[in-house]
Amino acid sequence: MTTDVLIEHRRDIADLQQRIKNRRLQVFGLFCTPIALIFALLVWAVLKVLFWLHADTPSAINGILFGVAAFLGIAVVVQLMAEFSEDLDVWRDRNISVRELKLKLSLAEERHILEARRRTPPPMDRQASYKERLPGEITRLRRESRHYRRVHLLMQWLLFVGSAAISAVTAWYDPPQPAKGVLIGLGFMVTVITAAAGYFKPRERSFNLQQTADNIEQHATALELGIAPYNAIDDVQNLELFATTVESLRADQRMREQQLDQPQQGQQQVI
Image (cartoon, rainbow, N blue to C red; front, side):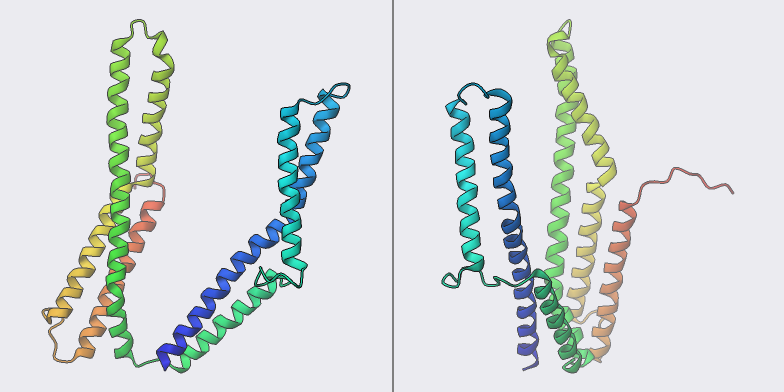
């Protein structure tokens, strides 16, 4: 029952979060579509006054602007009907403000916290549940590691190709005036990629993520097999040590990410 109740609270929170996103889009459309329609009509009128005051406006211009205005007009009518018509039940939260939905979300999160506090399982159950969530965390770390590794490899290949192309184009054209634009573009690409690789450090991020994933998986395997350092007789002690170790590894990973995000300091320490 505890699990079902907490899952139901999480579903309510996720549903309210999605409803807030949808309602924001609806309100954005209600306000911005009429403004866009008025702007399109003003553009049509300004073009007529400035360029074709004493002549007929080209049919292509009239057709494009008429199509845009008609589309926006239909969109305005449809949105107003969906918002204010009692017969249409298209929008779930019509006539409800985003502020009211945020209040409902805040109350739902508060109920979830109070219910979770009242139904909190014992530490051993929480630690066992924590262990079961780790495969997803390991998968996430390795997925991000592969992403940064691909970014790093793509940057390196672009650098290789760009550098080789600069030399090839320079050697092929003599004088190099016909290829001046190509050389400028290739040089710009090499400079930008070099600066981006030095700033974002995808290789270091990939290495750190993969190392953290491997370390967590190593400890999870040791706990599963009951080998050191998780070979104590008491399972509670093993789970507590495991949770502490994994959280320490994750904290180290976050610290390394923060260090990579900080700019390099070129100052030297004076001893």
